[in-house]
Length: 259
Image (cartoon, rainbow, N blue to C red; front, side):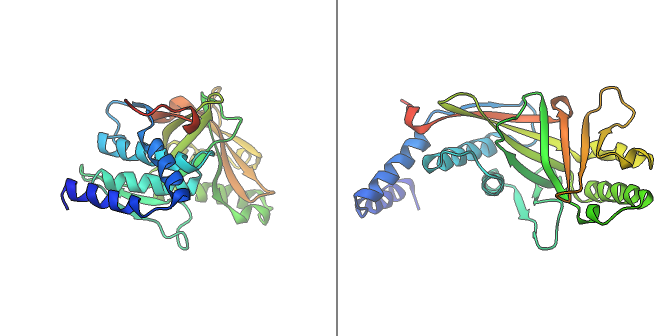
């Protein structure tokens, strides 16, 4: 289908809409035309031009009808769609059989990357620290009482996580003011969990464990949450992560279409 035929077909579809539907489409088009401030990190393997443009379009489309930031599920869909637009192969993980990663991406350089995808818009986000409220479930926490068993389970879990997942990609959304949202896309390689292998049995008993455990300035801490049976990663220094890009999205009511 050539461009003129596509445009003609779009006009015909719009002509068939009634007034309430026209209002929705008009708002959606305004969102797509909204000027978005985008800053991409030079040399990023992820935010190539095609990927970033497709992801930016998805952000615009989402906020055409949604005031709230992307949820994790919406982010997963936008992320995979942007990968496809970039010409990459993506294989979403089967959630019924996999607990650690969410998607597998194959890029032209011959790399195949297993990624965990997360999104957060918590009000207490800190610019210089990243927080992962739920790295993974760990049902064994509530039933493991012996110190040696707890120690072995922690070592085993983080070893399995590293073996099955290459990186965690996190979309953070800051509410900068009343008129815009600031999205930041960061990546945390799972190799940062390697120091967990060297925990002592005594160190593994703490509710919150700094990593590296003997450092005066740990890169992050892991929290073993017995009440929710989950692993939390907190206080991740932003220098430990790779920032791939940022997007500032005006609220639609305040946005000005590109001239």
